[in-house]
Length: 421
Image (cartoon, rainbow, N blue to C red; front, side, top):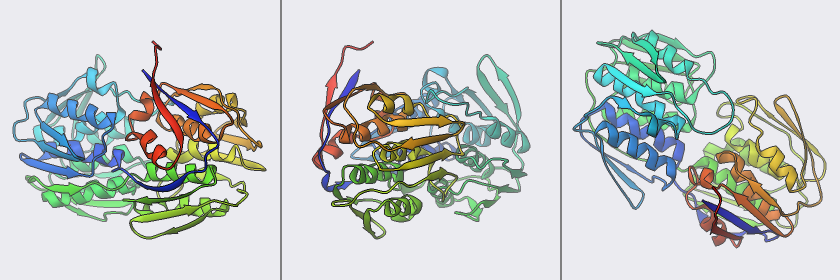
């Protein structure tokens, strides 16, 4: 295992390029199961979740080649419709293969998914959507077994706006017979890009980017190429790092429109930002950051994947802040670790009440999930002395060598091998 060793107290300065979006790529990759051909995805990040999905698709018969952020996927010879536990247990996004396998081949056997070790995140929305499209669903020995001779269009209304369920239903519906209407669909950039990619394959989808998607099923899809969007969560994490350290940074390969509310909250905190479609610059030098409350919500609201990072920021801001997560009610495993660094935070139901302290002090802390890990790295950048962040394999699931990006901005952070078991 690796750990990060961080010497805090350096104001970040410089320019850094943001990687492609991990969450978007994970939705795009299984969609190639819907066609028979060679598909190319560019701007793909080199992170562990991508490699996990590659292994899963390879298990199904997809030939994959990945170099220089270009991922080539050949779905010509699919040999299996079974997604085994050994791959699916590592990542919840693996359930994305359910919809396309069912729609294209009439059967899918997918292990119940794993992933981050926090919170109940049931997949019942995925399964109910497949049932409404005409699939028979059984749960047997830890596997979802879905069967249908031919899916039929249906009206799907999600009680909760779910990115994963929307993506899965969308991929199933494009080959279903007739019309499917998805209401309360997720409108996150990752779903918008998936829908656009499916259209480039030949799918018929209206309402892209909205909460109502109308799909007219087609008989077949062709292969296609797509450029993956920038990672808005990585960009937001780096912006908060700049604000916390009172630095001056610039980011390229970023879509500022995907970060409207994060940018607004950073401006409310006192940071100065300028931006266009592909660049964001932040200047937090010579400011005294202000406390700003946030409440997470579905896009275009404040992302739940930025909640832990914002909590870390508010822990060193004078005054009190309230951080409320309406998406996942128990996503606060970073709080005990932040308190080890000296943060003053109380958890009350699905909110964190943060009383800012003058400074954090370095200590050894342990990562528990992907975004919690990012919050600990941010705290280490401003903590007095040395901070060690253990179990950073969580970070490697979703951030492409984040220590190198931070080093480029002047941070004193090193990846070190450990003997931890």
